[in-house]
Image (cartoon, rainbow, N blue to C red; front, top):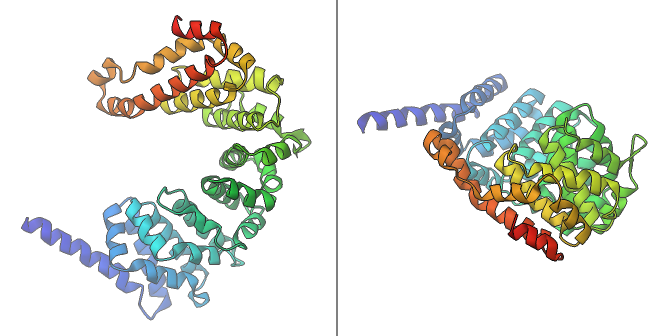
Length: 376
């Protein structure tokens, strides 16, 4: 006990030293202190928590907002705050309570790209946390148009801003705000970016914008990306040689557009591309999370349409594949791999739920399909 107490005191003293250096009258020493703090917190949640408790955040935010701080210092402050945000949910709550979001949004008005990118990276980390109120992005009506204007600045701004949008678009009101600020026109060209991360985040944006939204979906049908209809760009992204995450998200985009009435259920991009892609996601070659997502999206796609239900029931042994959803956790994993067992247990409920949703959609209209589901 004595050893652990003395160690705790030593750690706290070290943390206090980092914070004290932020108040040094010499700007060079402050900069070096922030750099040392950055190196100390990487992968160290205990150190992050200590620094937050000892009041590092308000001082870092103060330095970040002072034009007299100099570009290097302001940028390093944003980097350290981003690192603190990668800690626990309590860390994020503390940062939000210190009004980190308005301070970082203000930082985006800077003319220096390196500082803007550091602020955006930190904002992205804060906003993707489930404990951050997404409404904070919409409080100031000048923020969304300014973010749109920054999209063309660099690949990093594109990646971070689209990720912020996809995580903060939770309601139809959010969809409307983004749509009214020309999100579709600004984000569409990013689907052919040379950066995979940018393409992927742009795709996720379209999936959340189109979900149950007729206005967005109808607009997407008429969008051209480098002369090619957007729906065809999504079709290319579903090809087997693309990463699974991309295939699945592109299939979601087309599913949501179809359910919103922008694409007819009999169109080839749905019958020959989207539906087979989603059935493929249900196979046991994929991760459990992907199988859940695939089955739930497929259930949503075919729910109102008996013809799609018939096609799905005869595609790639789907009904047999769904029976597999009830085999987790498997007895083999229980013996050989505790981590795998834990993972399987966590997802077993989700898998069953997804399978039941898909069974319900498959058998909602046709007696023959119901028999096939009940007696495979």
